[in-house]
View 1 (cartoon, rainbow, N blue to C red):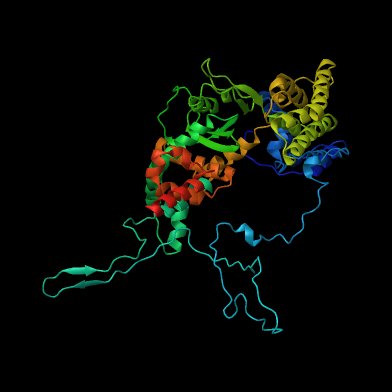
View 2: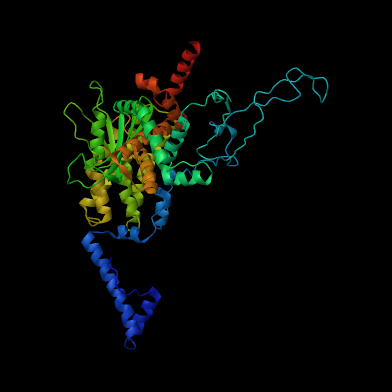
Length: 535
């Protein structure tokens, strides 16, 4: 909208008073200026709608604060209608409130240091000091007390090694450093912590530099970069193996978000102006893996690069993405994919226009809510892929078929303007129907691409805080750490411990990277330590 040289502040009530007063007497110069300004503003909004094809709901989203939730019940209430009795399953209204005080139990502190404290005066078998007759025996569960202390993210210890000099030969004798203190200034744990703060939690180098400086342990941003770049080179085989195993996945999710690299030499056409971070999440053999790629390639192109690692004898995997063409990879004939589209994207089109078409949107949102409720039941009961497919065919099949017939009827009978928000939402649903309903025909097919959208929040968090990568090499290092860190989160592994052990066992990782994946590295570490102890 164009900004005029003069800004006029006038309320709706004042405008109504001006219009009513114009019936009785001519407008004054000041009132005329206010009314004319309001008309010009309305004309500008009308032009904006016509030129940019902006729907009323999209304009409202620009002018008003975006909703914080898309849950069916809350969405319908914002539109001024009450959900029906079957709606709101996504709100878990029927679940009992979990008991407890909200504080974390001691068992949640899995990474805390454990210290066993024996009783100072009593032990097993002693006479009871209270009754003098019974014998004491230890209880299975000890009493637990959690003590939390604060410290700098990166700790430092200064060792003062005593030195002695001979007064005749001038030979200097220096005390040996304590055991475990190596020659390197920076331990592997320091690089792991910097990487997790930067690429896992969005703390820029300069911000960590300021924090460390305030705590009296200086750590310049340039030093932090040198640490993570050196660590990335030593653990690169784990990232390559992660890509290789992701390529063998049964389901591959992909999407991308915008990114920025200041010094970027494009690998694709010079006509392409965009820079993206692509996220790929793969599920294979019960494991989830996340990969990130930042550059001028789209999500589909990056997925095609990963699939070059796929074994030829494997059946075609399922690809889940939204309906954008750039998410679809261009593959050679010998590589095939079974395409599925994200049901959440189709649903979101109705969420956007619910204020303008509340009754129609309620039907769609509640029907899809029951479909998602069915999928959650299958997940909670631990159904196999075949059982889940049969369950969806029985419960969700009639709902989706009814939704398809309803949409076709709405368009055929011209119950709404085809180019309206509702018309576009229905046409999107029907156009991609086969891909949106793959979960009714294929075992293991997901409903949506939400897992990849959540993964991309890692890249978005980094973008919000650090704003950009300086070079393509910086983006490569960031993608490597982001991939390994988020894969650890998906697998329930400790990313700090994992990155540290990869650095400490870089030689073993180089020889056999398959054994050092986040879901099995602990077993590999135990075997390695056992062999070292035996030797």
